[in-house]
Image 1 (cartoon, one colour):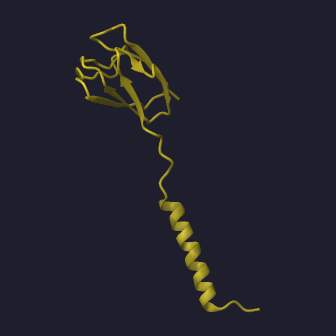
Image 2 (cartoon, helix red, strand yellow):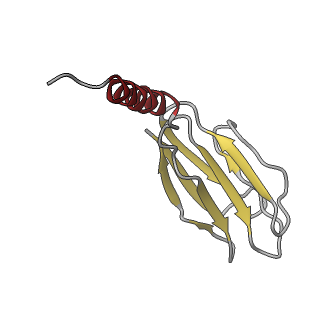
Image 3 (cartoon, one colour):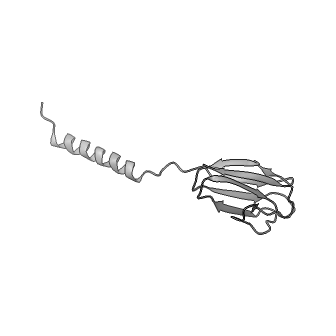
Length: 112
């Protein structure tokens, strides 16, 4: 049984749209990772992210805090209440950080 030209065009168009959708569909993005600074603590105290991901810290305390890596890789300025700081991690490893104003506040980011 022969296929009608209109049906052939419709099938070709559907395949073209499907192929284009596969090409332009966005990749599954990593969900944003946010660490809260509250009650003189980082929460969560340990996060794991893939290489290339960013972590954002947001100060919810009424006191200023910093986000300072122990190896000198990143350092925020003093973050007042509701201020935030974001850093993009490009290399795998374990990154320890603290608040330089309150050095008992410590946490880690593990990059896979």
